[in-house]
Length: 200
Image (cartoon, rainbow, N blue to C red; front, side, top):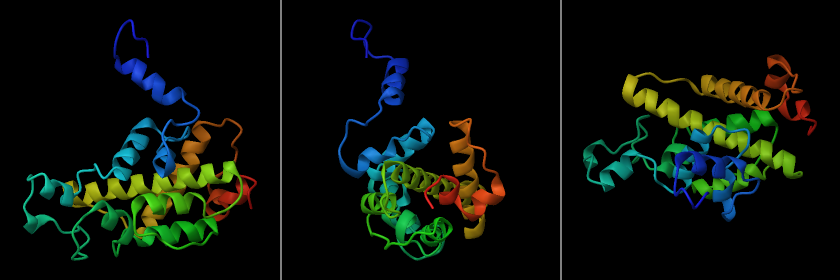
């Protein structure tokens, strides 16, 4: 940041987007990814810091009453970040579908940060493979949040199969947007993404 002119949004944006390695430790560092739109990284940062406006957080702030704190999917549980993104009877099943598509396995952790870290490293391999798994986790979480908001504000929601298709489509689009030599089409990507990237 240029200290002679003080704080500007442009300087903050440049700082966030030009850093190769985030200056934070642990799983929270994983929210910053070069193939992910900045708004998604900011969403993920809020998620891992438990700063999203989930119903539980809104109750805690006195904006909603306890009577409306339940999960939109009818699980009967309070809508916390942990519940919505990890253990919800509906949204929680997306992770096993995504792992099946990728051909990897692993347990689901019960905390968002642990889940993010474990998922990112669940395929093994080097830095490039972990970076791809990181991208897929961020996309999946973003899609869950957007679907949750569609249910809340528009009374519309997707099936798990439709959400999985969105994960596949977004991962392909976002990788292609940043890599002109990424030539794989939908069919091959739908069946074997790790092989497309030379990991399988």
